[in-house]
Image 1 (cartoon, rainbow, N blue to C red):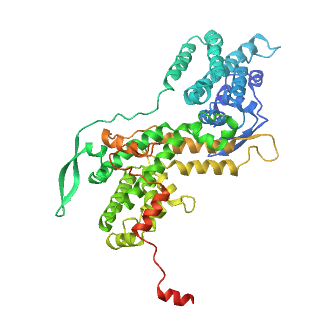
Image 2 (image 1 turned 135 degrees about the vertical axis):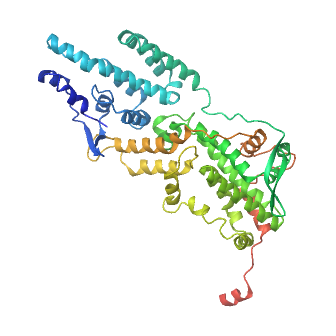
Length: 478
């Protein structure tokens, strides 16, 4: 960031007086060295806008970070004011013809182009957030392009206007939409008979009437379909929704805030309840053990698919209080399959701030679905643990904003951009979406497969009643 090489190149061709008039003083910016590059640690808004539109410096990372996080220290209207004012830069009075032409060519034109570049980055990356429902801002930028840019850069203006119109149409559409294929049946290659794998055919229409029919489908296939649904939900989460978790009160976007995040959170809650409900609704102890094994396989397959949302959600159901207290069931599992949960539990454990999870994700490549909850918590830590301003100053603490930008870009946006190459099967997709619908998964001929937590607690006590203290324990107590 902040490479000075362009200025060094100019020194070989420009005279001293020419170099002097092109200089800018960043006396209200604080820099620090990171891996040999100068990075802005903080400063005033005015000088940060000067920096992102500088005639010799191109720092797109800083620009993107500022555009993403600007609501935490200014408004979109004020940022637009400063950018458009920066565009109006003109040569100072008193220059001779030679210096005037140098200033115009080497400073005015590059700065105006940088302003246009910043506006394009803003429109392309944050249109829905800042322009879609802000008609005055939208009209202002469009009129600026039509009246100013069209006159100064005739070839650039049409592209900017076309981008505005495209974004206006695109932003009303979802980022990613599943296109399920509906077949009457699928081949199920995970069935076993006498210890041998045999191929069976499963009638997909059974899922419409029997909420437990999924147990006859290979857990890998269910994991794939769960991943399809969860990637669709994850891909819709907007950057501003993550930012609203920490800066919502400053942004005043209550009508929009958390819309897609809430869908994802509701889905994970419902799937967790579904897992627990399916286990506790299985009366036969041996069959109940098999259901738990099925969900463990499902969790493992989610891990194999890099679907950490699915992994965390399924394990949340397995570790839910009413299920976790089934000591006899878990003891039977431990005796027959002692290592079945060995690697899964620690991976999603909150111990040491999700240390195992972070270690695993560090080497994870897309396509993948991270567990968003970890990063929403991280955003809160960044907000609460860092001051808005640098110590003993009025300078904006941009290091704090850069941490937010880096986290969202690397842990959320990067994974949203690479979809899975999986075939969504219509009936299974519909089944999973029905489970996580706000209506509570109604619509089956039988009762809903999802219980409330209170119902789960009651059923858990029926499955394994509380054991009374033994006489020996009572004697010890006396």
